[in-house]
Structure formats: C-alpha cells, structure tokens
Length: 133
Ligand SMILES: [Cu+2]
Image 1 (tube, rainbow, N blue to C red):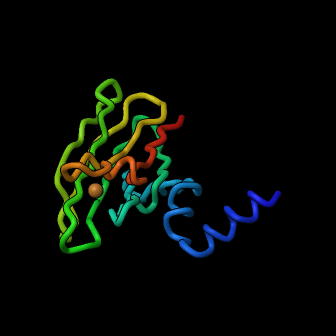
Image 2 (cartoon, rainbow, N blue to C red; image 1 turned 90 degrees about the horizontal axis):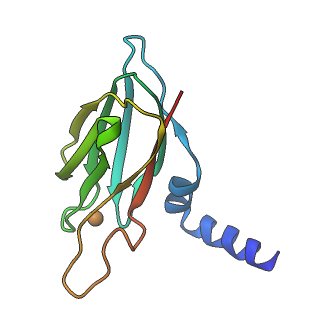
C-alpha cells in the first residue's frame, strides 16, 4: 500500500513519463482509413509510449524530438509484421508509413548510448507498438 502511494506520488510529480508508459493510446482511424499518430521523443521517454493500432490498416507515424541538444532516434524492428524503422530524429517531425501485417506487441526504443553511460533505452526511452485485430 505504501509502495503504491509512493508510485502515485512519483507519477504526479513527473506526470508525463508515467502516463506515457502506462496509458495505451488507441490511435484513431481517420476518414480516409489511415491511422495517424504523433510521438514526441523526450528525456527519456516517448509520449505516448504505448500506442495501439489495428492490423492490416495503414499507419502514418510522425515523430519529433523535444530537445535541441540530446540526440535521439526511433527504432521499431518487427520485420514479420512488415515494420522496420531506425532513424535519427530531429525537431522537425519525421513521417513514417507502414501497414502492420501481424498482431502483437513490438518494442519502440531509442538506441542512443553515450560512451560509458546507460543507454537511453535503459533510462526509460522505450515504448510499445501494440497491433490488434
Ligand atoms: Cu534517446
């Protein structure tokens, strides 16, 4: 119980990363049948960090990073679902198109790792792309 309270307080103090990690964002399907979603890469999280898309429907994913100085990238390696993304990010949104061909949960992460330091992924820069029926 006490631990639960601590976690809650921590989440309130740093609302964005906690929400990003815990609240699945169901990507809406636009009238033209495309699922459009925008992700922001911050230190050290993706927001939203858990996105849910429908299988066999096209996705337009826009990603940008928040900070000027710290380099980030986005990696999604799910070749059996037809998704292979690995790109450095900038403050200008970058757009990716793909159509997930298989249901499942696939990790989204930043592969940056400064020398002698923890990787961004280890610092929490990891999310989930969930593909559902
Ligand atoms: Cu990063």
